[in-house]
Image 1 (cartoon, helix red, strand yellow):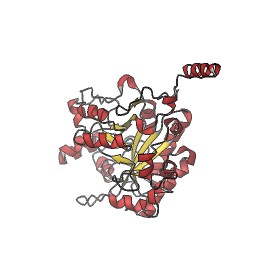
Image 2 (tube, one colour):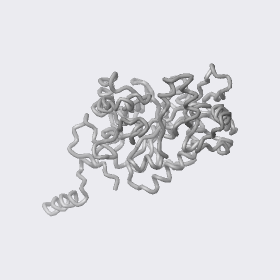
Image 3 (cartoon, helix red, strand yellow):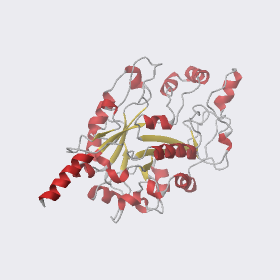
Image 4 (spheres, one colour):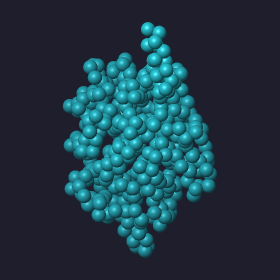
Length: 367
């Protein structure tokens, strides 16, 4: 018996991982994410035109990101993609903003109108004005992420939030009117995810719920999966209003058979992952939800305002709140602002042990 215990002790030292480290759960860490992860900055000539019309909106839109794989290389482990329904293709291939640019003799770099002719979900921020993306197709973004994953085995889980965009900009009749996200259109999000990822790569509501009466009951009573079981996997979340969320849930109680979690209110069978964007105003609420067992995504900055003031207050409150996903537009500083504002974990760590849980150790290594 003593020999056996000695071998267990030596093995734990050799691998650097205690039993407690192996039992760290998905909700007991913190990850850094990017907001509107696909987005390129608006071309200067178009941005100037927007600024002349609405300077506040122009300043709020004045940010952009690195390619998805480069963000993942830097340690980003949560992404956000906005999708537009385009089953026939070509709906967004000639944005109005592009026509304005051509009128003044300018044309944007990194705009692939030909790719927008293909059928399938498209990725962009705002039709016709903020339309430039590193990858304009949803399935193309997913493939890029999956290729990165295969090249980096043992990575921490990657959380991807999805906005299903169909807002009509009524005061701009020249702008494209997006197709609504009907139940069938929402099904297409799941279908395109399944076209890229195998089931074993996904953390789905069903895989978390298991035999519990509801998804919410499972995460509150049984907890989230052990982190070691979540490596090399992806968790998708539909971040949408109640009407679209209910369309997605209908026929799938507790999201059985669905790929994505939803931002369902506490007390409903589907509640598990919550989007609460202001960690200052909702600090106590976030802490309470995290302690109970929910996953929460919040934001370290919004609308470029924190970056312009080099104000890390919101990020610091996000860390203290225990929110498991903290999203930012500035994992790298924007030199054009001249403030040096940057949101990164201490020592450029990929993840942190969640401060709201009493963990002596948590195994966050990716090597």
